[in-house]
Amino acid sequence: MATRLNEPKAKLTDLAYQMIEEAIVTLRIRPGTSLSEQALSEMTGIGRTPIREAIQRLAREHLILVMPQRGLLVSEMNVNKQLKLLETRREIERLICRSAAKRASDSERQSFRRLADEFTKYAARSDDVAFVRADREFNELCLSAASNEFAEGAMRMLHGLSRRFWYLHYKQTADMPEMARLHAAVALAIGKGDIKHAGEALDRLIDHLEGFTRATVL
Image (tube, rainbow, N blue to C red; front, side, top):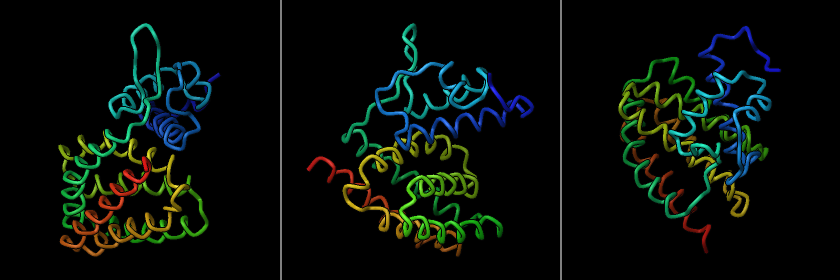
């Protein structure tokens, strides 16, 4: 039976989304896996209505495919699609990072500086799940600080797919320390309000991700 029944519905939907998204990104639920609302409700301990709403969000982000009369399927990964995703992500995320550097509040800037430290800390102890969680927090903080609902809508469709692809392959290249360094550079530039360097640091991050993606097929 589902738990957390006293939580507000919106909070339960967010929690269901976070739990399922992390399970997909960290490959506890593998690409190609068939799912059902009931199974996800049992996994999370959350009722069917919030689960259904979380599924809709994950479908918009292309992590889950909803197939009429056939149920749910976790999407497969594809290098060519990942490269197209990064091409799109570069332009939108550069705008978001520059806007965040310009508009972030003092408390948000402090959070960016904290996250820069956390990226380095989690990489040093090879804590990949904590790193993925910090990356998700960083992405959400960028969207909040940028305060551009149009860029936010486009960006939300890209982050989960990027994290999952990286998580599948990063151990082959010992990539976590470099990803930590690059993420920390973006976070620090935003935290300092340095618009120019925030955009440049983001470009270096995407350059690295493009090279990393191509290397997975060599």
